[in-house]
Length: 247
Image 1: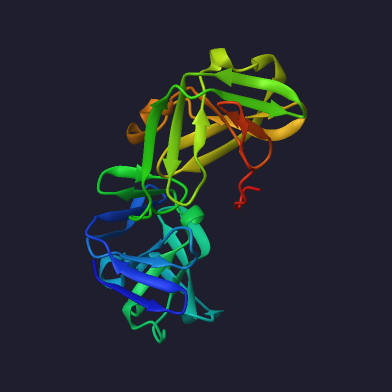
Image 2 (image 1 turned 30 degrees about the horizontal axis):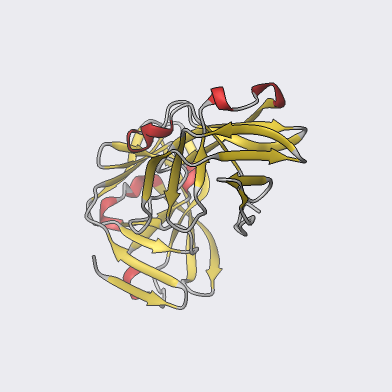
């Protein structure tokens, strides 16, 4: 992949076929997408204008400024009977030469995204993020306000680039009577859709992936807890609470 930088923005080409849908129709379909790191955590897809349905884009007459990408021409996206207001940006005169002649779609405004023939959720995958899930016999004990809510020697430890290790535990080793299911649902492009529980009245301290994506099947139905918000003991030693965006 070719890469370029301007300030904190990184740009790379990806060899994957990328598609996005709105109103049940393909709005953009390309094998020449760019990955643009507008934020440090993950990239965003930019499509060549030649691979976008021109009839789906309608300029609003407004612009949006980015310190690193310049002035964007704002477009509304229409497809079939669906409309996504101000959901597409094009940077014809960007100081980032690589993104000129490309369109960026707002992820949440579109109906669905695909890399090749696999649907991608929440945001584009970062090619530099790796997820490893390993079985472990280490003794894992989870405490909330001094109360043990989980105790296991059968953890699956999930190691994800840039995040602390997460300990996924069998439900039989968790005090389910202390957990209260919430209506929170989140999506991860590497793991799938998660459900959440409050613990001792503290909202969304625990989560689980009931039907994870194929590459994360080893954590199916297991329960994990936010290391940042409670106490986890590993082989009898209290772990320091990590500082992350979830803290």
